[in-house]
Image 1 (spheres, rainbow, N blue to C red):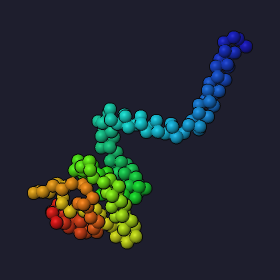
Image 2 (image 1 turned 45 degrees about the vertical axis):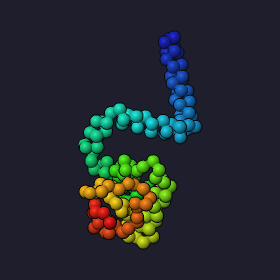
Image 3 (image 1 turned 180 degrees about the vertical axis):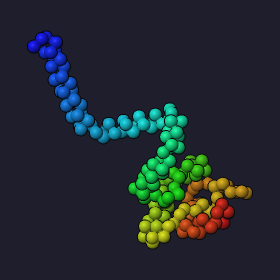
Image 4 (image 1 turned 30 degrees about the vertical axis):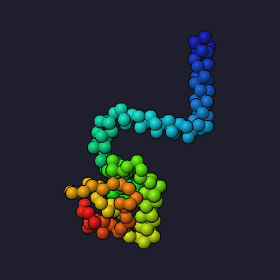
Length: 155
Protein backbone atom coordinates (compact mmCIF):
# COMPACT_ATOMS: atom_id res chain seq x y z
CA UNK A 1 0.00 0.00 0.00
CA UNK A 2 1.12 3.47 -0.72
CA UNK A 3 1.04 6.19 1.87
CA UNK A 4 -1.89 7.83 0.09
CA UNK A 5 -4.06 4.72 0.44
CA UNK A 6 -3.28 4.43 4.14
CA UNK A 7 -4.14 8.09 4.66
CA UNK A 8 -7.43 7.60 2.78
CA UNK A 9 -8.27 4.54 4.86
CA UNK A 10 -7.72 6.50 8.05
CA UNK A 11 -9.98 9.29 6.75
CA UNK A 12 -12.73 6.78 6.05
CA UNK A 13 -12.46 5.39 9.58
CA UNK A 14 -12.58 8.92 10.98
CA UNK A 15 -15.72 9.70 8.94
CA UNK A 16 -17.38 6.50 10.19
CA UNK A 17 -16.52 7.38 13.80
CA UNK A 18 -17.93 10.90 13.30
CA UNK A 19 -21.16 9.46 11.83
CA UNK A 20 -21.57 7.23 14.89
CA UNK A 21 -20.85 10.13 17.26
CA UNK A 22 -23.40 12.36 15.47
CA UNK A 23 -26.03 9.61 15.62
CA UNK A 24 -25.45 9.18 19.38
CA UNK A 25 -25.67 12.94 19.90
CA UNK A 26 -28.95 13.13 17.91
CA UNK A 27 -30.44 10.25 19.87
CA UNK A 28 -29.42 11.77 23.21
CA UNK A 29 -30.59 15.34 22.38
CA UNK A 30 -33.63 14.68 20.18
CA UNK A 31 -35.94 17.11 22.02
CA UNK A 32 -33.42 19.97 21.93
CA UNK A 33 -32.84 19.38 18.23
CA UNK A 34 -36.60 19.38 17.54
CA UNK A 35 -37.02 22.71 19.34
CA UNK A 36 -34.05 24.17 17.47
CA UNK A 37 -35.50 22.98 14.17
CA UNK A 38 -38.88 24.54 15.00
CA UNK A 39 -37.19 27.85 15.87
CA UNK A 40 -35.15 27.81 12.66
CA UNK A 41 -38.29 27.08 10.66
CA UNK A 42 -40.19 29.91 12.38
CA UNK A 43 -37.35 32.38 11.82
CA UNK A 44 -37.09 31.36 8.16
CA UNK A 45 -40.81 31.94 7.68
CA UNK A 46 -40.55 35.38 9.28
CA UNK A 47 -37.58 36.38 7.12
CA UNK A 48 -39.00 34.90 3.88
CA UNK A 49 -42.80 35.24 3.97
CA UNK A 50 -43.07 35.28 0.18
CA UNK A 51 -41.51 31.79 -0.05
CA UNK A 52 -44.07 30.45 2.42
CA UNK A 53 -46.98 32.15 0.62
CA UNK A 54 -45.78 30.79 -2.73
CA UNK A 55 -45.54 27.28 -1.30
CA UNK A 56 -49.07 27.49 0.08
CA UNK A 57 -50.50 28.81 -3.18
CA UNK A 58 -48.78 26.09 -5.23
CA UNK A 59 -49.66 23.33 -2.71
CA UNK A 60 -53.14 24.46 -1.68
CA UNK A 61 -54.65 20.99 -1.22
CA UNK A 62 -51.68 19.74 0.79
CA UNK A 63 -51.74 22.82 3.04
CA UNK A 64 -55.51 22.46 3.60
CA UNK A 65 -55.12 18.78 4.48
CA UNK A 66 -52.33 19.62 6.92
CA UNK A 67 -54.47 22.27 8.68
CA UNK A 68 -57.50 19.95 8.72
CA UNK A 69 -55.45 17.21 10.42
CA UNK A 70 -53.88 19.69 12.84
CA UNK A 71 -57.31 21.03 13.87
CA UNK A 72 -58.58 17.48 14.33
CA UNK A 73 -55.62 16.58 16.57
CA UNK A 74 -56.04 19.80 18.57
CA UNK A 75 -59.81 19.18 18.81
CA UNK A 76 -60.64 22.59 17.30
CA UNK A 77 -63.71 23.55 15.27
CA UNK A 78 -63.34 23.68 11.49
CA UNK A 79 -63.89 27.46 11.37
CA UNK A 80 -61.23 28.22 14.01
CA UNK A 81 -58.85 30.96 12.87
CA UNK A 82 -56.47 31.00 15.80
CA UNK A 83 -58.12 34.01 17.43
CA UNK A 84 -56.44 36.35 14.96
CA UNK A 85 -59.45 38.64 14.56
CA UNK A 86 -60.33 38.96 18.21
CA UNK A 87 -56.81 39.57 19.53
CA UNK A 88 -56.91 43.25 18.55
CA UNK A 89 -60.22 43.62 20.41
CA UNK A 90 -58.94 42.02 23.60
CA UNK A 91 -57.97 44.51 26.31
CA UNK A 92 -55.13 43.85 28.75
CA UNK A 93 -57.56 43.44 31.64
CA UNK A 94 -59.44 40.55 30.02
CA UNK A 95 -59.31 37.32 32.04
CA UNK A 96 -57.52 34.83 29.75
CA UNK A 97 -58.26 31.90 32.05
CA UNK A 98 -62.01 32.45 31.94
CA UNK A 99 -61.97 32.96 28.16
CA UNK A 100 -60.05 29.70 27.66
CA UNK A 101 -62.50 27.92 29.97
CA UNK A 102 -65.44 29.20 27.91
CA UNK A 103 -63.83 27.82 24.74
CA UNK A 104 -63.05 24.48 26.37
CA UNK A 105 -66.65 24.26 27.65
CA UNK A 106 -67.91 24.78 24.09
CA UNK A 107 -65.63 21.96 22.87
CA UNK A 108 -66.86 19.72 25.70
CA UNK A 109 -70.52 20.43 24.86
CA UNK A 110 -69.81 19.60 21.22
CA UNK A 111 -68.16 16.34 22.22
CA UNK A 112 -70.94 15.29 24.60
CA UNK A 113 -74.01 16.36 22.61
CA UNK A 114 -72.56 15.58 19.14
CA UNK A 115 -74.02 18.94 18.03
CA UNK A 116 -71.66 21.80 17.17
CA UNK A 117 -71.46 24.59 19.77
CA UNK A 118 -69.71 27.90 19.15
CA UNK A 119 -68.68 31.01 21.01
CA UNK A 120 -70.85 34.00 20.22
CA UNK A 121 -69.86 37.59 20.87
CA UNK A 122 -73.01 39.24 22.22
CA UNK A 123 -71.80 42.59 20.92
CA UNK A 124 -70.08 41.81 17.61
CA UNK A 125 -66.38 42.58 17.31
CA UNK A 126 -66.88 44.38 14.01
CA UNK A 127 -70.51 45.48 13.95
CA UNK A 128 -71.98 48.15 11.69
CA UNK A 129 -72.91 50.54 14.53
CA UNK A 130 -71.13 49.11 17.58
CA UNK A 131 -67.92 47.13 18.16
CA UNK A 132 -67.53 44.82 21.14
CA UNK A 133 -64.53 43.47 22.98
CA UNK A 134 -63.19 39.95 23.26
CA UNK A 135 -63.81 39.68 27.01
CA UNK A 136 -65.55 37.07 29.14
CA UNK A 137 -68.68 39.25 29.68
CA UNK A 138 -69.21 39.50 25.91
CA UNK A 139 -68.98 35.73 25.24
CA UNK A 140 -71.69 33.12 25.33
CA UNK A 141 -71.89 29.51 24.20
CA UNK A 142 -74.61 28.84 21.63
CA UNK A 143 -75.35 26.17 19.08
CA UNK A 144 -73.81 26.74 15.67
CA UNK A 145 -77.07 27.29 13.81
CA UNK A 146 -78.07 30.05 16.28
CA UNK A 147 -74.68 31.74 16.01
CA UNK A 148 -74.62 31.55 12.21
CA UNK A 149 -78.19 32.81 11.87
CA UNK A 150 -77.43 35.80 14.12
CA UNK A 151 -74.70 37.03 11.79
CA UNK A 152 -72.94 40.25 12.75
CA UNK A 153 -75.92 41.78 14.56
CA UNK A 154 -76.06 43.02 18.14
CA UNK A 155 -78.25 41.12 20.60
